[in-house]
Length: 245
Image (cartoon, rainbow, N blue to C red; front, side):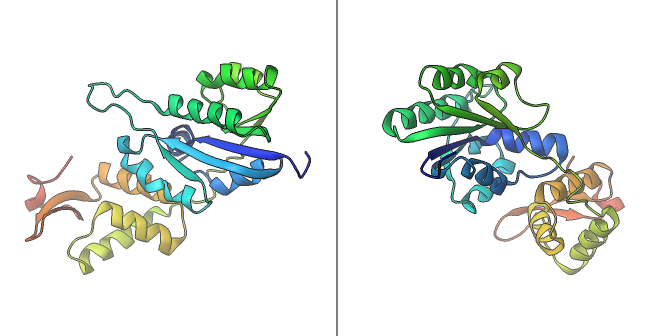
């Protein structure tokens, strides 16, 4: 591609984060997306889309986007219903069409998703509008029609062994924290351990949740003058009645 080519990057962050988290237990490497998009020219637009209100994990992961200067677009869903109505796809599609109409100098549009709902817009922009449409997705999680509609498909390299969690070390770390600090919470433990050990935060979160499921640690409500705090504890007989499932 010409170095004069202008590029727009649109990221379906819910698809990216939850697929990598649920399938591989790791966080997405946002810098990989920037590198891929930059191969096609000057990156002029970079936006990510998600309903952050729907997931604490997603909100916590949003910092990954800020570190790469990507605009986070809140696609607030309707949480008043029994089944949440998600508008992420609509918000992202609106932004893609808006960029095409308002910024004619953009010749390549990179769309990070595996969702088949984007097949029509991808095909239209490629065939009718003569744009170079690059779909970036996770192997085995890219809709077949979407795959065939794009100018090019790039599959992200996945290495789920890059951030292994040492189970015994995590147990020792949490146990020591409980013995030396009065209010050891799940989220704070995940944040500190991932930074100290330089391992993936999502992997730590899953490993600690597994230890709780196994009964190695339990969660209790501690009453403080300021507020009630959910803390981690080692299981004791007296704690059984208060333990949180």
